[in-house]
Image (cartoon, rainbow, N blue to C red; front, side, top):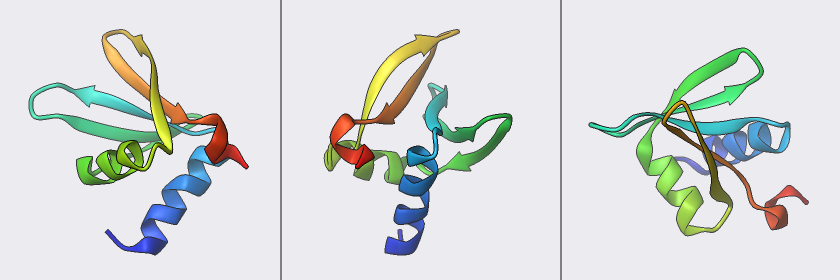
Length: 74
């Protein structure tokens, strides 16, 4: 994953977007902003989790949502 793509995902998250786990097996994620969404590879989500940039917040219809941690918003 390129640094540019990682930064682009962070920018979308800072604009009010979120990540949603849309499938359990195999695990699949989507990056959402308003009514728009795009597939998001799992390794990006793992990188964001490991770097503590995102955290799981809730389950909506059985789907886990991830948002930016407060420290990542600045």
